[in-house]
Image: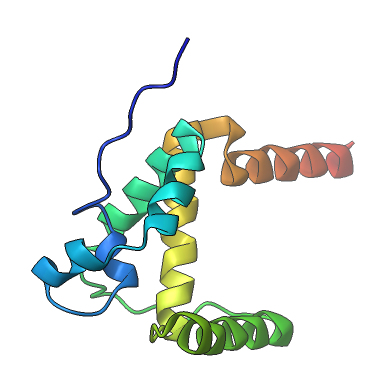
Length: 132
């Protein structure tokens, strides 16, 4: 069965990757980004779109997750890379929030076969085996 044509990414989060006003953003969307998004399997595109929708809401609650030093260093490196490679300013909070949002969207789309679903099933197996 041929794959259906996907809708345009205009208004679907591409603006997160590009600075400027909304009208100039549509004109500056990188064709390679559109191609890369078109290559995503449908379920991953749905997760991507859902995560972008969630990120449109303002972050009005503060929590302080504990991270290993290596995790924090990696997040700092990613923020630096975003600035140097893509010219996009991302904070550590942006990166953590994107990760959490993706995890939630992935779970909502795939449930027990999502990354979180598989983790929970694995954790349950570990608890059952230690209880025996």
